[in-house]
Figure 1 (cartoon, rainbow, N blue to C red):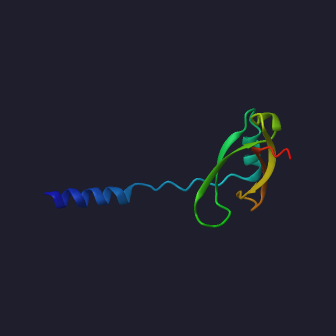
Figure 2: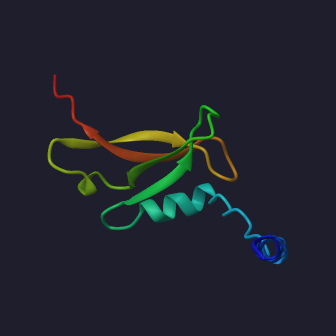
Length: 95
């Protein structure tokens, strides 16, 4: 009896449709998300090609950064370019 159940479950799993992988957003979509009033946390593939998924908080205005932080440029990969220019908040270096 357990063998029949296992075979039935295996057949059912093969019959279910697979969901496509989520499409990577374009650079314009990433920049639009970052334009939210307080910025946006966005996941993106590691530019090193390691297969890791990274995330960070991206902003378009320095006013979205906490006191003591300032807006600095960063490039991340997008669906349509390897170098999508965005901004993150980083500790201000007032030397």
